[in-house]
Length: 501
Image (spheres, rainbow, N blue to C red):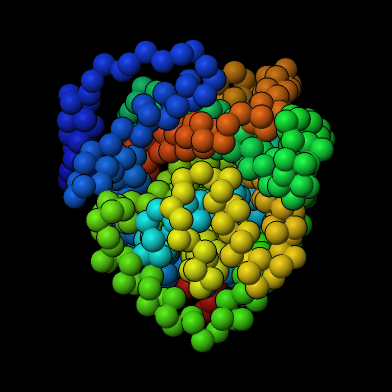
């Protein structure tokens, strides 16, 4: 607990220092873009280290990921093989409580993390931070596996089971119920409400508007750019996607899982196969690419903020992509059919590995090997074009495939985030049908809005809302970690006994 208090103290001290140095903001015109930008700036307050500005929220996530990796004795390595066995159904019991299988829970959660961040986010990280950012993305994915294990275990452990067989889980429940058992009922309730509010905002922002915005832009480019029949009328595409999403999300998590367990493996398979084709076509340059990544990770140019700047760029894009420590995935995993919370937590640690260590690294290698990162950009539309150009240099037809992939990535992410938002909304306003329908109508409305708002402000708001969820979530994880450590030891003892038998 002393280590936990020290980490919290360091973070709180950093926050107060930043706030103490703050200046009164200059009034800006009251527009949607300015509102979204102001929210983003408030969440991403930073401190300056080594010439680079480091958002406090990233320090918070990184500290948590390192702590959980050490505290759980590298569960991200020791639990990997067992995670594969559980996903394969080796330990399934059809009589266990829950709504979906381990595999469906994994694909539903993966569909929420595998999105345009794997395409545009990686390109932004490399174009601004250089190839070295890839190393830090991989490391962030590796450490994030431990955070994901803790939060998803808690999601199942403290879920609510309803009379109709459905379940509700996630940070709202383990923060309120788990901390109440530690005589911290008020703290748990406050943290749960704060998380739920940010989760609803995140579902509208990063889980919705960011996704549809990039899918729309890519579709316009693929259909002729300025000559496209949708140019200047992007909202039409937004309406079409809103209808598709509405039809699917009406059925809840089972309906969503039935779509994602088919779409996610399909889209990931196509994307990884294309990436491997490009990488293997430059087989002789692979060692050089890895050498460039390692050298860039530790000897970054000062023009991009030096070593710290490259490290932060890698961690930021990885954190947005895999959402480890954010708490969102625990909402999907809480629906898994299991009476062993630890088993689902171990399944969940595969997410950052697949999302960041595999898919993001594939994208990075394609960009680096084809040397398509010469012009720095933080424009995510241009970043997708950059990735498209990298693939297109070997596969001229790939931009069309990428357009389909971006749309599928966006669709699957919106489906999962609609579920996250629904559960957060239900926690705030009740589980009734009226509350559920009102949220889904709002969610689909934001799809149309996101298709027409500027990309830069949408990404800023999306990042801010999703990262803000980590403040109450990680604090709760620190406080609840000791009981998860005990549960893990008990669970591993049971598995060892089963293997002997």
